[in-house]
Length: 300
Length: 311
Image (cartoon, rainbow over all chains, first blue to last red; front, side):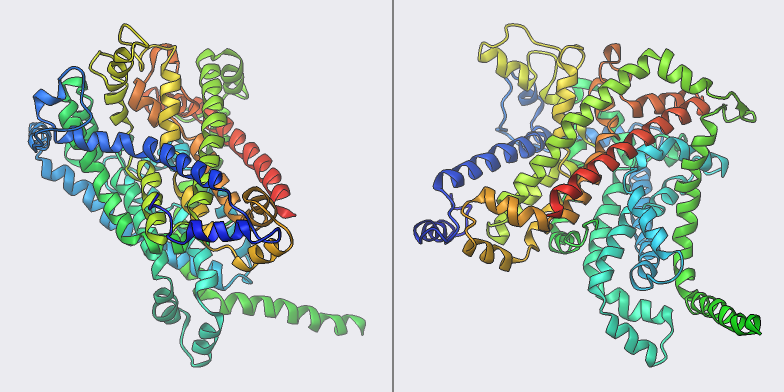
């Protein structure tokens, strides 16, 4: 029960006994809250923890009956096996890693610039003809995730001759509306209009106002766009667009290794750990910025 | 004389609009790169899929106009589509609201906890959605032999005597996939709700307590919900967009196609015709039907939520 703030129960208790006019929170209710969080939390965390434990189990522990949740003699053999399996493919493992890192880093950096540039006029020059229309259009397209528009998009990408190039994965990510929407929402309240006006009176042009005044105000939103864009690109398999071996993305290769079935349970878990750790670390670092940005995400 | 009187006014108005646009030129320049990408990769594909849905198109020859043939074939003759539609609707109707409610209740419950505890629980709840598309880790749990975690546990508890093929038996695999979908459904919508609760105006709660609000439920209904409207709408968009984009989860767990198409979805059907058979006209028809279903759902949910949170 140490999960709760120290004075949480005391405060509730005082409220409960202070008379009819104050809010009461029953102990029964607190117990129910705790139980609910425990059940949902276990459901969310246990599969990931089990995968983590599986990934460091030696072979004999992976195939005992009955299977054990815990690991007795942890080892990194599964990670070595996964790297070996990937190394036995046509091109070196480092090439797949490079492909995924390349599109993740380049795509994320480029998207922050493109999305901020687009969000700024929508947030701070709302009265210009067309701005309101585009903002509303973007809210509507939030409904359509990349998966849903993938096939119609395929015709365009293939028509532009971008199959088997990084462009096929980068451009759709740069056209995403989610980051533009979040950035716009955040800019509306995070950049004071008075500062912009003052800069204009001093004769600064709009581009330098954007770079020197607006961008530094929205650092939390950058962090948020970094985590969402990086996560999306890092887990991109590129299965629709990439057929050439040397251009394949890491998650695509890794899922091929993991698809080896029960015999590859160890390597499969190791692969899952490799995929899930980077986004979790990035999120941990940027969590408070993300929450600050998400507070402005509401659709009015 | 009256015309000379009105003309300058008219001209002046035209001039000022033009001036606004000219002064705003840097803003349009800033918007241009995104707008170009957005138009080419979202607007044009969506609009062209409507056009292509009336054609026979294989990516090699010029599209051939076939009228409503694709729609007739899809809606009346394609039994697999009927199955995919039914599966998608059940997945969406169950996982959408369950994920949405779970996100809301967790966000509500953790709101009063200390910052560190709240951050920790947020991370745990968000981790499955954050981890990337590693749905296949559930195959270790649902494994069909007696060494699978679920099978061995149930055998030891004496609930089943022989191992069950959870992911290939059409009787069970739908439920298994549904569990995994719910597992990964607490995404950005959940984060928005956590942040929304955090930024609620505390003074309303104090005022409400004085006005006689007495328990969690009354507080939720009369004070919290009306303030949470925008976050609830955003989270609903995330739920709907996720619920109708289900497909990768099914393919990762039960294979594609699954046994008797028991977990086939509209998205998988579209991908099948689009990237395997290259029947782009037909794939576009599936896309259009999916878009229409999603838009109608969003309009309906939007209306309900606005009504619910407006007073």
